[in-house]
Length: 139
Image (cartoon, rainbow, N blue to C red; front, top):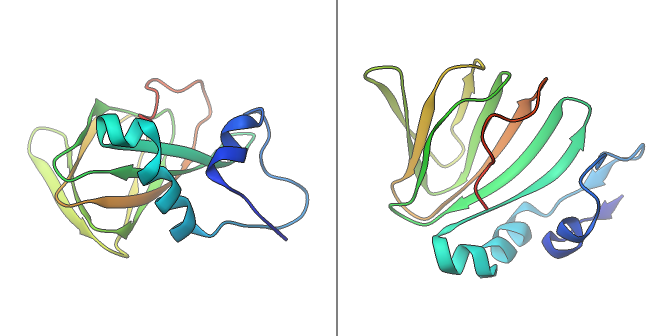
């Protein structure tokens, strides 16, 4: 098994990132790298696609407290698991939930939603993206 770094992942072609053998990602190390990334330092947002194969995407995202992922929707269902911190997820006219560390949310595709970091946070998104993304995941 091999460990992936944020910088080497960004340098590689983004086509197929799941190899035929298991891969280990030290998520806490990836979070540290994302938080020192120039994008995070400038905008309070940074993310990296850890794995991509076919429709599957595994994305690690960091948001500084108060930062938001504007309303958007995905082409397919996804799960969102908070690794550190907490986030507010809003959807529909008035639906929302506060997710804390280790909470997991499952979500259908095609539902507009937004995410606000209620403290410095990191979360993993695993999504089935059957079509081209309708919104770029903020870096």
